[in-house]
Length: 442
Image 1 (cartoon, helix red, strand yellow):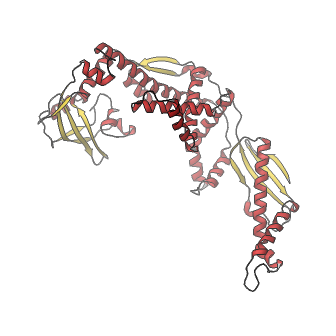
Image 2: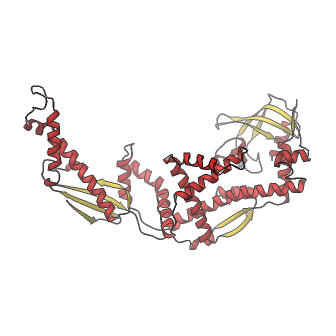
Image 3: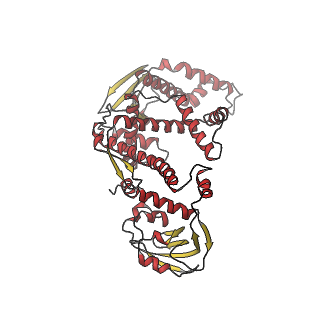
């Protein structure tokens, strides 16, 4: 069997496979003999059908099966031997034009090649990495929020300035229907606040969405609308009062501190603020780190230049997709997935370029850390190694879980690589401004 690589346009090749009859005849004859031994055809005893009839009835289909099997095996071996870095899978050219009556056969496969490139981090110095400002105003606001959250609630007849309400916001035409808890101090519109005062359970208050909150993004929380809707949303929603509660703020005493933070961990408001600041710093650090990884990822996709075998990939999507896409539909699918493909290639290049590998021990250690965190959340702060290892090995016996955890390990290593290779500007901002950054509104 002769296999030849024929370069085509950029990043595509043709693999030509010439098959001689001598390479498949033996297996075809064996299959025909096996078929003849068990064939049951009307007018003949089982196993006694004349060979000419067997050849006529089954010869071509068996030949096709055996040749296709042989070609697939040899093609895979060739691709592995040549270490061809492909995108997608080989596509057979003109399969309907193959003359299966011919003794010697030729097959041609089109393949798409992965591009060669390097990943350069030098331009990332123009990116910004944010930290969230945790000043006294923030901490005082958190203390007030926690006191209210853990305060005593009693049913009230009418709405007062300090009431907490259970409200259903609705506007059928805008597709809004959401029940939520809200305090009057959440509203930025003084007229809206006044319209609630004195109202009772069952009353309905007409609320304009424009200027309702100090930040339009809060519409996403209270009305459950999408980010695309929040800016410029100017409709009137009905706010149906489901319940009214009067709140007595929690007393800042030792019983409250122990309940919130554990026995003897916090003794006064200043220590409480320290604890709040530590917890908030960890939470916000995860969010800002995630945002920075997203920003670097976007930068690399936009600035790491390489070509892709687009025409080949569109054909491959059309042929490999169970939805039987047309070329036009496959082209649209390619446009939607192109950035994802580009980042997959960039990520793979970063790993190889920096000799980063994911070992089973990496996966096991990562899973162990997650399990310990989860057990701590359920009250088991000091599980034994034996307990943790038993759970981890059960998880990692599932290949889907191994793949999922491996992807998390890769993400962790890529984040560490970004920290090592990039030198962003540092900026401290409020959480409200950071939310705007997340949505590209800065």
